[in-house]
Image 1: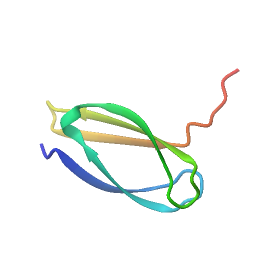
Image 2: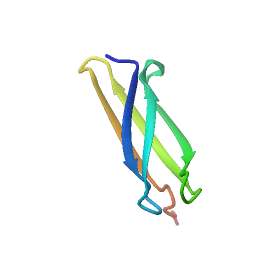
Image 3: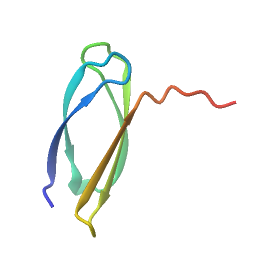
Length: 67
């Protein structure tokens, strides 16, 4: 599996297309990064499945409120 993969995602806040690179050598991870257009935080959840040689990337605004 390649260690670095690049994708273009859409900001869940403003819809701006953002190019991002992920280092899959670290395994699965969850992190936040700010949109360069609207400066709102984007929540990334990267799941690396080494057995199937697959990477799943989930992007959301992470602004849901739980009561």
